[in-house]
Image 1 (cartoon, rainbow, N blue to C red):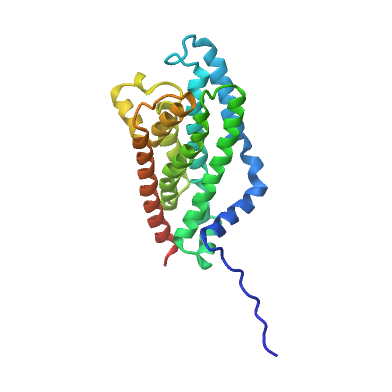
Image 2: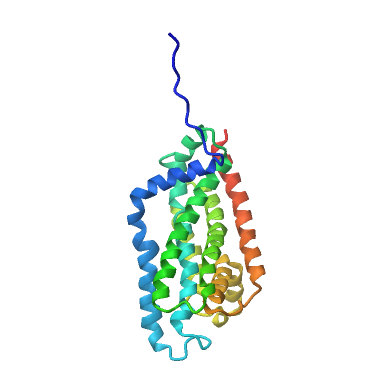
Length: 264
């Protein structure tokens, strides 16, 4: 009698979708753990800063109520925090601890498929967070323009702009202590000084130009223009091209770092 061999399940036409599906299956069991950090915490920040501190700012910022001015900055900074959070320890552990990437590379998956599928999951995580954030802040009346819905694709582009280079960083470091340093010396200062909580024009000139270099400031300016229904401080196309440049450079760096680890 001949041996009957069970056919291997076929990969999707886009193999990266198989990787995305893997992370979505795991997320079904863990999504509750991230509710506070990715959703409730920003909402509490809106209540504390927007309504609490904002009550003491009589003139608002540039004639705009402080809550309305703050919310678009929180949209962008929340996207940043979720994107970086899902691109540091998860990526590092997939290389160093649970070795998920090595198992995926043993299947008929290219390095680009593994990287693209995981990045797509990070974008999904940010999308769900920002949609919920927009719904809640809309109930507070903090979205003054119907163009506020366009902050979602801006948040997605910001996610790629920060997650891709963070993937490269997390794939290259030898200890998770370097990930904590990334938050301490890059993410936290970027959040504080990129125009989320106060205008960058109030900063000294050197710090102001450092803020302009960060991808977060470009996303904040775009989101603020969209939610307030005004023109951005800088060219909208320029903002998008700058974020796209970060995304492309980050992708190339991450692809190189992944290949160095996964291709023998």
